[in-house]
Length: 564
Image (cartoon, rainbow, N blue to C red; front, side, top):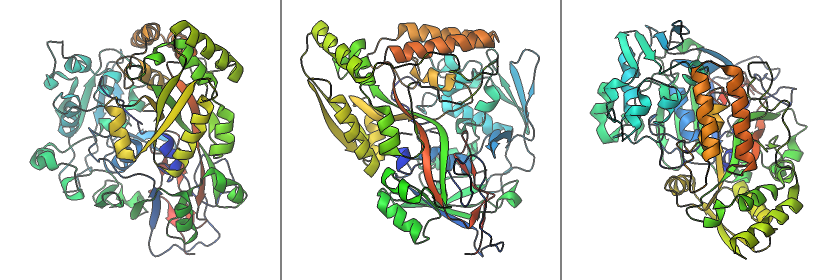
Protein backbone atom coordinates (compact mmCIF):
# COMPACT_ATOMS: atom_id res chain seq x y z
CA UNK A 1 0.00 0.00 0.00
CA UNK A 2 1.43 3.34 -1.06
CA UNK A 3 -1.30 5.90 -0.64
CA UNK A 4 -2.72 6.84 2.74
CA UNK A 5 -1.68 6.56 6.33
CA UNK A 6 -2.23 3.10 7.66
CA UNK A 7 -2.90 3.23 11.37
CA UNK A 8 -2.33 0.78 14.10
CA UNK A 9 -1.49 -2.74 13.28
CA UNK A 10 -2.86 -5.25 15.75
CA UNK A 11 -2.68 -1.59 16.13
CA UNK A 12 -3.42 2.92 17.85
CA UNK A 13 -3.17 6.50 18.74
CA UNK A 14 -3.78 8.57 21.81
CA UNK A 15 -7.21 6.98 21.58
CA UNK A 16 -5.59 3.84 22.93
CA UNK A 17 -5.11 5.19 26.37
CA UNK A 18 -8.72 6.34 26.23
CA UNK A 19 -9.87 2.76 26.18
CA UNK A 20 -9.18 1.10 22.87
CA UNK A 21 -6.98 -1.41 24.68
CA UNK A 22 -8.74 -1.32 28.02
CA UNK A 23 -9.42 -5.02 27.81
CA UNK A 24 -5.73 -5.69 28.28
CA UNK A 25 -5.79 -6.73 31.91
CA UNK A 26 -7.10 -9.00 34.63
CA UNK A 27 -7.80 -8.75 38.32
CA UNK A 28 -6.68 -9.47 41.81
CA UNK A 29 -2.99 -10.15 41.39
CA UNK A 30 -0.52 -8.78 43.92
CA UNK A 31 1.91 -8.07 41.11
CA UNK A 32 1.26 -4.49 40.10
CA UNK A 33 3.54 -4.59 37.04
CA UNK A 34 1.47 -7.20 35.30
CA UNK A 35 2.57 -9.26 32.35
CA UNK A 36 1.15 -12.70 33.07
CA UNK A 37 -2.29 -14.03 33.91
CA UNK A 38 -4.48 -12.80 36.74
CA UNK A 39 -5.53 -14.52 39.95
CA UNK A 40 -9.01 -14.61 41.39
CA UNK A 41 -10.42 -13.71 44.79
CA UNK A 42 -10.79 -16.35 47.50
CA UNK A 43 -14.24 -17.40 46.29
CA UNK A 44 -13.82 -20.64 44.33
CA UNK A 45 -17.43 -21.04 43.13
CA UNK A 46 -17.90 -20.05 39.51
CA UNK A 47 -20.56 -17.53 38.56
CA UNK A 48 -23.60 -18.86 36.72
CA UNK A 49 -22.72 -16.75 33.69
CA UNK A 50 -19.18 -16.77 32.37
CA UNK A 51 -19.40 -13.38 30.72
CA UNK A 52 -17.23 -10.26 30.62
CA UNK A 53 -18.10 -6.67 29.82
CA UNK A 54 -15.69 -4.06 28.48
CA UNK A 55 -15.70 -0.46 27.28
CA UNK A 56 -14.06 0.95 24.19
CA UNK A 57 -13.69 4.65 23.47
CA UNK A 58 -14.42 4.34 19.76
CA UNK A 59 -16.80 2.53 17.45
CA UNK A 60 -15.90 -0.59 15.48
CA UNK A 61 -14.96 0.60 11.94
CA UNK A 62 -14.97 -2.75 10.12
CA UNK A 63 -14.71 -6.52 10.54
CA UNK A 64 -13.40 -7.18 7.04
CA UNK A 65 -9.91 -8.55 7.64
CA UNK A 66 -8.70 -7.32 4.24
CA UNK A 67 -9.73 -3.74 5.00
CA UNK A 68 -9.15 -3.19 8.73
CA UNK A 69 -6.34 -0.81 9.67
CA UNK A 70 -7.10 0.02 13.31
CA UNK A 71 -6.72 -1.80 16.62
CA UNK A 72 -10.42 -1.92 17.48
CA UNK A 73 -11.21 -3.79 14.27
CA UNK A 74 -8.11 -5.96 14.56
CA UNK A 75 -9.04 -7.06 18.06
CA UNK A 76 -12.42 -8.35 16.90
CA UNK A 77 -10.96 -9.97 13.79
CA UNK A 78 -8.30 -11.80 15.78
CA UNK A 79 -11.01 -13.31 17.99
CA UNK A 80 -13.19 -14.30 15.03
CA UNK A 81 -10.69 -14.93 12.20
CA UNK A 82 -7.44 -16.31 13.66
CA UNK A 83 -4.77 -17.36 11.20
CA UNK A 84 -2.27 -20.17 10.96
CA UNK A 85 -0.37 -19.14 14.09
CA UNK A 86 -1.39 -17.31 17.25
CA UNK A 87 0.03 -16.05 20.51
CA UNK A 88 -1.54 -17.77 23.48
CA UNK A 89 -0.48 -16.80 26.99
CA UNK A 90 2.51 -15.02 25.44
CA UNK A 91 3.68 -18.09 23.51
CA UNK A 92 3.63 -18.60 19.74
CA UNK A 93 1.59 -21.71 18.96
CA UNK A 94 -0.25 -23.21 15.96
CA UNK A 95 -3.86 -22.08 15.54
CA UNK A 96 -5.55 -23.01 12.25
CA UNK A 97 -2.35 -24.90 11.48
CA UNK A 98 -2.21 -28.31 13.17
CA UNK A 99 1.50 -27.84 13.89
CA UNK A 100 4.32 -25.42 13.25
CA UNK A 101 5.30 -25.28 9.57
CA UNK A 102 7.79 -27.46 7.77
CA UNK A 103 10.51 -25.34 6.13
CA UNK A 104 12.75 -26.38 3.27
CA UNK A 105 16.55 -26.19 3.52
CA UNK A 106 16.99 -22.71 2.11
CA UNK A 107 14.08 -21.24 4.08
CA UNK A 108 11.97 -20.28 1.08
CA UNK A 109 9.10 -22.80 1.21
CA UNK A 110 6.80 -23.13 4.22
CA UNK A 111 4.29 -25.97 4.36
CA UNK A 112 1.39 -25.75 6.80
CA UNK A 113 -0.81 -28.72 7.67
CA UNK A 114 -4.26 -27.43 8.62
CA UNK A 115 -6.45 -28.76 11.40
CA UNK A 116 -8.91 -31.21 9.95
CA UNK A 117 -11.46 -30.40 12.65
CA UNK A 118 -11.52 -26.65 11.95
CA UNK A 119 -14.76 -25.37 10.44
CA UNK A 120 -16.58 -22.16 9.66
CA UNK A 121 -19.48 -20.96 11.78
CA UNK A 122 -21.92 -22.20 9.09
CA UNK A 123 -20.47 -25.71 9.32
CA UNK A 124 -18.27 -25.57 6.20
CA UNK A 125 -14.85 -27.19 6.71
CA UNK A 126 -11.84 -24.89 6.72
CA UNK A 127 -9.59 -25.67 3.76
CA UNK A 128 -6.28 -24.51 2.32
CA UNK A 129 -8.21 -22.80 -0.48
CA UNK A 130 -9.71 -20.43 2.11
CA UNK A 131 -6.24 -19.05 2.79
CA UNK A 132 -5.36 -18.85 -0.90
CA UNK A 133 -8.53 -16.85 -1.60
CA UNK A 134 -7.99 -14.48 1.36
CA UNK A 135 -4.36 -13.78 0.51
CA UNK A 136 -5.15 -13.15 -3.15
CA UNK A 137 -8.03 -10.89 -2.19
CA UNK A 138 -5.70 -8.85 0.03
CA UNK A 139 -3.24 -8.10 -2.81
CA UNK A 140 -5.88 -7.67 -5.50
CA UNK A 141 -5.77 -4.00 -6.66
CA UNK A 142 -9.56 -4.09 -6.92
CA UNK A 143 -9.77 -4.71 -3.17
CA UNK A 144 -7.74 -1.54 -2.53
CA UNK A 145 -6.56 -2.78 0.85
CA UNK A 146 -4.27 -0.39 2.67
CA UNK A 147 -2.58 -3.47 4.13
CA UNK A 148 -1.82 -5.16 0.80
CA UNK A 149 1.83 -4.21 1.25
CA UNK A 150 2.15 -6.65 4.19
CA UNK A 151 2.29 -9.55 1.71
CA UNK A 152 5.47 -7.98 0.35
CA UNK A 153 6.78 -7.55 3.90
CA UNK A 154 6.25 -11.30 4.29
CA UNK A 155 8.31 -11.66 1.11
CA UNK A 156 5.70 -13.94 -0.47
CA UNK A 157 6.73 -14.72 -4.03
CA UNK A 158 5.53 -12.19 -6.61
CA UNK A 159 3.62 -10.08 -4.05
CA UNK A 160 5.46 -6.86 -4.80
CA UNK A 161 5.15 -7.37 -8.56
CA UNK A 162 1.42 -7.97 -8.26
CA UNK A 163 1.12 -4.70 -6.32
CA UNK A 164 3.33 -2.69 -8.69
CA UNK A 165 1.22 -1.04 -11.37
CA UNK A 166 4.33 -0.75 -13.58
CA UNK A 167 4.98 -4.48 -13.48
CA UNK A 168 3.75 -6.90 -16.18
CA UNK A 169 2.51 -9.01 -13.30
CA UNK A 170 0.36 -6.22 -11.84
CA UNK A 171 -2.97 -7.53 -10.56
CA UNK A 172 -2.25 -11.15 -11.51
CA UNK A 173 -3.14 -12.52 -8.09
CA UNK A 174 -3.00 -16.12 -9.29
CA UNK A 175 0.80 -15.68 -9.47
CA UNK A 176 1.05 -15.09 -5.69
CA UNK A 177 3.31 -17.65 -4.03
CA UNK A 178 0.60 -19.47 -2.08
CA UNK A 179 -1.20 -22.64 -3.11
CA UNK A 180 -3.45 -25.38 -1.77
CA UNK A 181 -1.48 -28.61 -2.21
CA UNK A 182 -4.55 -30.49 -1.04
CA UNK A 183 -7.58 -29.81 1.13
CA UNK A 184 -5.55 -29.50 4.32
CA UNK A 185 -2.08 -28.51 3.08
CA UNK A 186 -1.06 -24.92 2.39
CA UNK A 187 2.28 -24.13 0.79
CA UNK A 188 3.85 -20.67 0.80
CA UNK A 189 6.85 -19.79 -1.36
CA UNK A 190 9.02 -16.79 -0.53
CA UNK A 191 11.23 -14.71 -2.75
CA UNK A 192 14.02 -15.37 -0.25
CA UNK A 193 14.24 -16.26 3.45
CA UNK A 194 13.22 -13.76 6.13
CA UNK A 195 13.76 -14.30 9.86
CA UNK A 196 10.32 -13.24 11.07
CA UNK A 197 7.98 -15.08 8.67
CA UNK A 198 6.46 -17.50 11.19
CA UNK A 199 5.59 -14.79 13.74
CA UNK A 200 4.09 -12.71 10.92
CA UNK A 201 1.60 -15.54 10.31
CA UNK A 202 -0.06 -14.58 13.59
CA UNK A 203 -1.08 -11.24 12.09
CA UNK A 204 -4.77 -11.13 11.17
CA UNK A 205 -4.15 -10.12 7.54
CA UNK A 206 -2.98 -13.70 6.90
CA UNK A 207 -6.22 -15.25 8.08
CA UNK A 208 -8.65 -17.25 5.89
CA UNK A 209 -11.89 -16.28 4.15
CA UNK A 210 -14.71 -18.51 2.92
CA UNK A 211 -14.72 -17.69 -0.80
CA UNK A 212 -18.26 -18.86 -1.57
CA UNK A 213 -19.71 -16.89 1.34
CA UNK A 214 -17.74 -13.71 0.64
CA UNK A 215 -18.72 -13.66 -3.03
CA UNK A 216 -22.35 -14.39 -2.22
CA UNK A 217 -22.49 -11.43 0.18
CA UNK A 218 -20.91 -9.06 -2.34
CA UNK A 219 -20.86 -5.45 -1.13
CA UNK A 220 -22.70 -6.48 2.05
CA UNK A 221 -19.83 -8.70 3.21
CA UNK A 222 -18.84 -7.97 6.84
CA UNK A 223 -21.22 -5.01 7.09
CA UNK A 224 -23.38 -6.72 9.76
CA UNK A 225 -23.05 -9.90 11.85
CA UNK A 226 -25.30 -11.82 9.45
CA UNK A 227 -22.90 -10.93 6.61
CA UNK A 228 -19.91 -12.50 8.34
CA UNK A 229 -18.62 -16.05 8.78
CA UNK A 230 -16.08 -16.80 11.47
CA UNK A 231 -13.68 -19.62 12.19
CA UNK A 232 -12.29 -18.55 15.58
CA UNK A 233 -13.34 -18.94 19.20
CA UNK A 234 -15.96 -16.18 18.94
CA UNK A 235 -18.73 -15.01 16.63
CA UNK A 236 -19.87 -11.42 16.23
CA UNK A 237 -23.55 -11.71 17.15
CA UNK A 238 -24.56 -8.09 17.70
CA UNK A 239 -23.26 -4.78 16.35
CA UNK A 240 -25.05 -1.56 17.18
CA UNK A 241 -23.01 0.95 15.23
CA UNK A 242 -21.85 3.75 17.50
CA UNK A 243 -23.12 1.93 20.59
CA UNK A 244 -21.22 -1.35 20.92
CA UNK A 245 -20.90 -4.98 19.85
CA UNK A 246 -21.12 -8.48 21.28
CA UNK A 247 -18.97 -11.57 20.81
CA UNK A 248 -20.32 -15.00 21.70
CA UNK A 249 -18.61 -18.36 21.88
CA UNK A 250 -18.40 -20.21 18.58
CA UNK A 251 -19.50 -23.76 19.39
CA UNK A 252 -18.00 -24.97 16.11
CA UNK A 253 -14.51 -23.77 17.06
CA UNK A 254 -12.11 -26.72 17.10
CA UNK A 255 -11.06 -25.98 20.69
CA UNK A 256 -14.43 -24.82 21.98
CA UNK A 257 -13.88 -26.75 25.21
CA UNK A 258 -11.05 -24.30 26.04
CA UNK A 259 -13.30 -21.26 25.66
CA UNK A 260 -14.69 -20.55 29.09
CA UNK A 261 -15.93 -16.99 28.55
CA UNK A 262 -19.12 -17.53 26.57
CA UNK A 263 -19.96 -13.89 25.93
CA UNK A 264 -18.04 -10.62 25.80
CA UNK A 265 -19.80 -7.30 25.33
CA UNK A 266 -18.09 -4.06 24.32
CA UNK A 267 -19.78 -0.71 24.93
CA UNK A 268 -18.61 2.54 23.32
CA UNK A 269 -18.01 5.02 26.13
CA UNK A 270 -15.70 7.99 25.57
CA UNK A 271 -15.84 9.76 28.94
CA UNK A 272 -13.39 8.45 31.55
CA UNK A 273 -15.59 9.31 34.52
CA UNK A 274 -18.49 7.43 32.95
CA UNK A 275 -16.24 4.43 32.38
CA UNK A 276 -15.18 4.45 36.02
CA UNK A 277 -18.80 4.71 37.17
CA UNK A 278 -19.65 1.64 35.10
CA UNK A 279 -16.79 -0.22 36.73
CA UNK A 280 -17.86 0.78 40.23
CA UNK A 281 -21.41 -0.40 39.56
CA UNK A 282 -20.17 -3.77 38.20
CA UNK A 283 -21.53 -3.04 34.72
CA UNK A 284 -18.03 -3.67 33.37
CA UNK A 285 -15.27 -5.81 34.84
CA UNK A 286 -12.33 -3.98 33.28
CA UNK A 287 -11.54 -0.27 33.22
CA UNK A 288 -8.61 1.83 32.09
CA UNK A 289 -7.83 4.78 34.34
CA UNK A 290 -7.10 8.36 33.42
CA UNK A 291 -4.07 10.10 34.91
CA UNK A 292 -6.24 11.84 37.52
CA UNK A 293 -7.75 8.52 38.62
CA UNK A 294 -4.54 6.51 38.99
CA UNK A 295 -3.33 7.87 42.33
CA UNK A 296 -6.63 7.03 44.02
CA UNK A 297 -6.48 3.39 42.89
CA UNK A 298 -2.82 2.39 42.47
CA UNK A 299 -2.61 0.76 45.91
CA UNK A 300 -5.85 -1.18 45.55
CA UNK A 301 -5.83 -4.93 44.83
CA UNK A 302 -7.68 -4.58 41.52
CA UNK A 303 -5.08 -2.18 40.06
CA UNK A 304 -2.65 -3.34 37.35
CA UNK A 305 0.06 -1.51 35.49
CA UNK A 306 0.49 -3.20 32.13
CA UNK A 307 3.49 -2.44 29.89
CA UNK A 308 3.06 -2.52 26.14
CA UNK A 309 4.88 -2.47 22.80
CA UNK A 310 2.83 0.12 20.93
CA UNK A 311 4.71 3.27 19.96
CA UNK A 312 3.23 6.72 19.44
CA UNK A 313 4.52 9.63 17.43
CA UNK A 314 3.67 12.69 15.42
CA UNK A 315 3.46 12.56 11.66
CA UNK A 316 4.18 15.76 9.76
CA UNK A 317 2.74 16.47 6.33
CA UNK A 318 5.15 18.68 4.40
CA UNK A 319 2.79 18.62 1.43
CA UNK A 320 0.43 20.75 3.53
CA UNK A 321 3.07 22.67 5.53
CA UNK A 322 6.18 23.31 3.39
CA UNK A 323 8.22 24.35 6.44
CA UNK A 324 8.11 20.72 7.60
CA UNK A 325 10.56 19.93 4.80
CA UNK A 326 13.31 21.57 6.83
CA UNK A 327 15.24 19.34 9.19
CA UNK A 328 15.85 22.05 11.80
CA UNK A 329 12.13 22.83 11.97
CA UNK A 330 11.27 19.20 12.60
CA UNK A 331 14.15 18.67 15.03
CA UNK A 332 13.15 21.74 17.05
CA UNK A 333 9.59 20.45 17.26
CA UNK A 334 10.85 17.08 18.49
CA UNK A 335 13.30 18.45 21.07
CA UNK A 336 10.80 20.86 22.59
CA UNK A 337 8.51 18.03 23.79
CA UNK A 338 8.60 17.34 27.53
CA UNK A 339 8.12 13.57 27.15
CA UNK A 340 8.67 12.87 30.83
CA UNK A 341 5.97 15.34 31.76
CA UNK A 342 3.66 13.75 29.21
CA UNK A 343 4.08 10.22 30.58
CA UNK A 344 4.49 10.83 34.31
CA UNK A 345 1.91 13.59 34.76
CA UNK A 346 -0.60 13.62 31.93
CA UNK A 347 -0.73 9.89 31.14
CA UNK A 348 0.39 8.53 34.53
CA UNK A 349 -0.42 4.97 33.39
CA UNK A 350 2.93 3.21 33.02
CA UNK A 351 3.70 4.66 29.60
CA UNK A 352 7.32 5.70 29.20
CA UNK A 353 9.00 8.51 27.23
CA UNK A 354 10.06 7.49 23.72
CA UNK A 355 13.10 8.82 21.92
CA UNK A 356 13.14 5.81 19.56
CA UNK A 357 10.55 4.20 17.29
CA UNK A 358 11.47 0.62 18.18
CA UNK A 359 10.06 -0.17 21.64
CA UNK A 360 12.22 -0.76 24.65
CA UNK A 361 12.53 -4.49 25.55
CA UNK A 362 10.74 -5.51 22.34
CA UNK A 363 13.06 -8.19 20.99
CA UNK A 364 16.66 -9.35 21.09
CA UNK A 365 19.19 -9.48 18.31
CA UNK A 366 21.49 -12.28 17.13
CA UNK A 367 23.94 -11.58 19.99
CA UNK A 368 21.18 -11.82 22.58
CA UNK A 369 21.18 -8.06 23.19
CA UNK A 370 18.29 -5.60 23.07
CA UNK A 371 17.99 -3.35 20.03
CA UNK A 372 19.16 -0.20 21.84
CA UNK A 373 21.78 -1.80 24.05
CA UNK A 374 25.12 0.01 23.72
CA UNK A 375 23.67 2.87 21.66
CA UNK A 376 23.95 6.57 22.46
CA UNK A 377 20.88 8.43 23.64
CA UNK A 378 18.82 10.23 21.01
CA UNK A 379 17.16 13.64 21.29
CA UNK A 380 19.43 15.21 23.88
CA UNK A 381 19.52 18.98 24.26
CA UNK A 382 15.98 19.80 25.31
CA UNK A 383 14.14 23.10 25.04
CA UNK A 384 17.16 25.38 24.72
CA UNK A 385 18.57 23.40 21.81
CA UNK A 386 15.07 23.37 20.25
CA UNK A 387 14.82 27.16 20.45
CA UNK A 388 18.30 27.53 18.97
CA UNK A 389 17.46 25.28 15.99
CA UNK A 390 14.11 27.03 15.52
CA UNK A 391 15.75 30.45 15.40
CA UNK A 392 18.29 29.20 12.86
CA UNK A 393 15.57 27.59 10.74
CA UNK A 394 13.52 30.78 10.57
CA UNK A 395 16.55 32.80 9.49
CA UNK A 396 17.76 30.24 6.95
CA UNK A 397 14.36 29.67 5.34
CA UNK A 398 12.90 33.17 5.59
CA UNK A 399 9.84 32.77 7.78
CA UNK A 400 8.94 34.45 11.06
CA UNK A 401 5.69 32.76 12.04
CA UNK A 402 4.22 29.31 11.52
CA UNK A 403 0.58 28.41 12.14
CA UNK A 404 -0.32 24.72 12.04
CA UNK A 405 -3.26 22.46 12.83
CA UNK A 406 -2.71 19.67 15.37
CA UNK A 407 -5.07 16.79 14.58
CA UNK A 408 -6.34 14.58 17.40
CA UNK A 409 -9.17 12.25 18.29
CA UNK A 410 -12.05 13.51 20.40
CA UNK A 411 -11.75 11.57 23.66
CA UNK A 412 -11.26 13.32 26.99
CA UNK A 413 -7.60 12.48 27.46
CA UNK A 414 -6.76 12.92 23.79
CA UNK A 415 -7.99 16.49 24.09
CA UNK A 416 -5.86 17.08 27.16
CA UNK A 417 -2.84 15.59 25.43
CA UNK A 418 -3.40 17.82 22.40
CA UNK A 419 -3.50 20.91 24.66
CA UNK A 420 -0.31 19.76 26.36
CA UNK A 421 1.46 19.25 23.04
CA UNK A 422 0.24 22.57 21.64
CA UNK A 423 1.66 24.36 24.68
CA UNK A 424 4.97 22.57 24.17
CA UNK A 425 5.19 23.65 20.54
CA UNK A 426 4.23 27.23 21.27
CA UNK A 427 7.42 27.61 23.31
CA UNK A 428 8.97 28.08 19.85
CA UNK A 429 8.74 31.80 19.05
CA UNK A 430 6.21 32.48 16.31
CA UNK A 431 4.61 29.01 16.43
CA UNK A 432 0.78 29.01 16.58
CA UNK A 433 -1.04 25.69 17.06
CA UNK A 434 -4.73 25.13 16.37
CA UNK A 435 -6.25 21.90 17.66
CA UNK A 436 -8.70 19.91 15.56
CA UNK A 437 -10.46 16.99 17.28
CA UNK A 438 -12.41 14.42 15.29
CA UNK A 439 -14.37 11.24 16.13
CA UNK A 440 -12.36 8.08 15.51
CA UNK A 441 -13.75 7.13 12.10
CA UNK A 442 -13.60 10.71 10.82
CA UNK A 443 -10.06 11.02 12.17
CA UNK A 444 -8.98 7.91 10.26
CA UNK A 445 -10.55 9.17 7.05
CA UNK A 446 -8.89 12.58 7.49
CA UNK A 447 -5.43 11.09 7.96
CA UNK A 448 -5.78 8.39 5.31
CA UNK A 449 -6.70 11.06 2.75
CA UNK A 450 -3.59 13.09 3.62
CA UNK A 451 -5.68 16.06 4.78
CA UNK A 452 -3.81 16.53 8.06
CA UNK A 453 -0.95 18.93 8.79
CA UNK A 454 0.34 17.44 12.05
CA UNK A 455 -1.20 14.12 13.04
CA UNK A 456 -0.77 13.99 16.80
CA UNK A 457 -2.63 10.73 17.42
CA UNK A 458 -0.54 8.39 15.33
CA UNK A 459 1.00 5.13 16.43
CA UNK A 460 1.93 1.60 15.56
CA UNK A 461 1.68 -1.76 17.26
CA UNK A 462 3.91 -4.59 16.03
CA UNK A 463 2.75 -6.92 13.26
CA UNK A 464 5.64 -9.32 13.89
CA UNK A 465 8.50 -9.69 16.35
CA UNK A 466 11.26 -7.81 14.58
CA UNK A 467 12.42 -4.16 14.58
CA UNK A 468 11.51 -3.95 10.89
CA UNK A 469 7.80 -3.88 11.79
CA UNK A 470 8.43 -0.36 13.15
CA UNK A 471 11.28 0.78 10.94
CA UNK A 472 9.72 -0.44 7.69
CA UNK A 473 6.72 1.78 8.47
CA UNK A 474 8.80 4.87 7.70
CA UNK A 475 10.20 3.76 4.35
CA UNK A 476 8.83 5.86 1.50
CA UNK A 477 6.85 2.93 0.11
CA UNK A 478 5.55 1.93 3.54
CA UNK A 479 2.35 2.83 5.41
CA UNK A 480 3.78 6.26 6.19
CA UNK A 481 4.38 7.57 2.70
CA UNK A 482 6.88 10.39 2.42
CA UNK A 483 4.45 13.33 2.73
CA UNK A 484 7.05 15.61 1.19
CA UNK A 485 9.85 14.82 3.67
CA UNK A 486 13.11 13.70 2.07
CA UNK A 487 14.31 10.33 3.35
CA UNK A 488 16.57 8.91 0.66
CA UNK A 489 19.36 7.95 3.09
CA UNK A 490 16.88 6.24 5.38
CA UNK A 491 15.24 4.36 2.50
CA UNK A 492 18.60 3.04 1.33
CA UNK A 493 19.42 1.69 4.78
CA UNK A 494 16.06 -0.08 5.04
CA UNK A 495 16.53 -1.57 1.58
CA UNK A 496 20.00 -2.73 2.57
CA UNK A 497 18.59 -4.35 5.70
CA UNK A 498 15.95 -6.13 3.61
CA UNK A 499 18.63 -7.52 1.31
CA UNK A 500 20.71 -8.67 4.28
CA UNK A 501 17.64 -10.50 5.59
CA UNK A 502 17.38 -12.32 2.29
CA UNK A 503 21.06 -13.24 2.57
CA UNK A 504 20.44 -14.43 6.16
CA UNK A 505 23.14 -12.09 7.51
CA UNK A 506 21.45 -11.30 10.80
CA UNK A 507 24.31 -9.53 12.59
CA UNK A 508 24.88 -7.15 9.69
CA UNK A 509 21.13 -6.61 9.23
CA UNK A 510 20.73 -5.69 12.90
CA UNK A 511 23.53 -3.12 12.70
CA UNK A 512 22.03 -1.52 9.59
CA UNK A 513 18.62 -1.28 11.27
CA UNK A 514 20.23 0.49 14.23
CA UNK A 515 21.83 3.00 11.85
CA UNK A 516 18.49 3.49 10.13
CA UNK A 517 16.72 4.34 13.37
CA UNK A 518 19.43 6.87 14.20
CA UNK A 519 18.93 8.58 10.82
CA UNK A 520 15.15 8.51 11.34
CA UNK A 521 15.29 10.22 14.74
CA UNK A 522 18.21 12.59 14.20
CA UNK A 523 16.56 13.92 11.05
CA UNK A 524 13.19 14.06 12.81
CA UNK A 525 11.51 12.16 10.01
CA UNK A 526 9.74 10.50 12.91
CA UNK A 527 8.92 12.37 16.12
CA UNK A 528 8.28 9.72 18.79
CA UNK A 529 6.42 10.68 21.96
CA UNK A 530 5.80 7.65 24.19
CA UNK A 531 5.68 3.88 24.52
CA UNK A 532 2.28 2.72 25.67
CA UNK A 533 1.46 1.45 29.11
CA UNK A 534 -1.95 0.92 30.69
CA UNK A 535 -3.25 1.59 34.18
CA UNK A 536 -6.07 -0.89 34.61
CA UNK A 537 -8.69 -1.93 37.11
CA UNK A 538 -10.04 -5.47 36.97
CA UNK A 539 -12.60 -6.96 39.29
CA UNK A 540 -10.98 -9.36 41.80
CA UNK A 541 -13.53 -12.04 40.92
CA UNK A 542 -12.02 -12.42 37.42
CA UNK A 543 -9.21 -14.95 37.00
CA UNK A 544 -6.94 -15.97 34.15
CA UNK A 545 -6.83 -13.03 31.77
CA UNK A 546 -3.36 -12.99 30.20
CA UNK A 547 -1.66 -9.75 29.25
CA UNK A 548 0.26 -10.08 26.00
CA UNK A 549 2.76 -7.69 24.43
CA UNK A 550 2.26 -9.30 21.04
CA UNK A 551 -0.84 -10.58 19.28
CA UNK A 552 -4.07 -9.99 21.18
CA UNK A 553 -3.44 -7.36 23.81
CA UNK A 554 -5.60 -9.31 26.21
CA UNK A 555 -6.22 -13.05 26.05
CA UNK A 556 -9.45 -13.73 27.93
CA UNK A 557 -11.15 -16.75 26.41
CA UNK A 558 -9.94 -19.10 29.17
CA UNK A 559 -10.64 -16.66 31.99
CA UNK A 560 -13.06 -17.48 34.80
CA UNK A 561 -15.63 -15.36 36.57
CA UNK A 562 -16.36 -16.27 40.20
CA UNK A 563 -19.43 -15.54 42.26
CA UNK A 564 -19.26 -12.24 44.03
